[in-house]
Length: 161
Image (tube, rainbow, N blue to C red; front, side):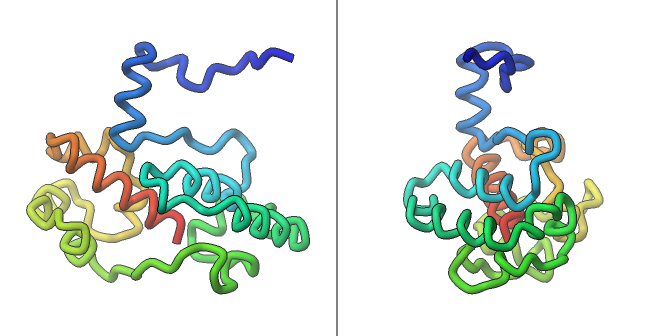
């Protein structure tokens, strides 16, 4: 059976797709996809190989989701802080520090020089930051591709928390 959906068809071509992925773009969740599964996808798509989960971890994670399917029903709730029992158990998702302020977060990823850009754009809370896309990062004045990648990668990691 041939797939009829082309997920990158709105992008210019193969080179534009590759550039966007290298800059940190990742596909949004498919329609109706539970947040828990999309977070797993994003985790598997980490640019750094050693940041990706091992196959055995993925199998274990999916097994726990199968045993607790109520987590799959949470399409948006997981993002807004309602814990899913599977995700709140230790070792399923790596622990990352929780940041109280945008300034702390930017400093932790060595991008503190962009604090004024974030404040000028009204991005004053971590909740606002986690909703940013690569286009938003460009729009606030982050022009260096390496810096864009670092910020977007960190945002994706924050979404996994």
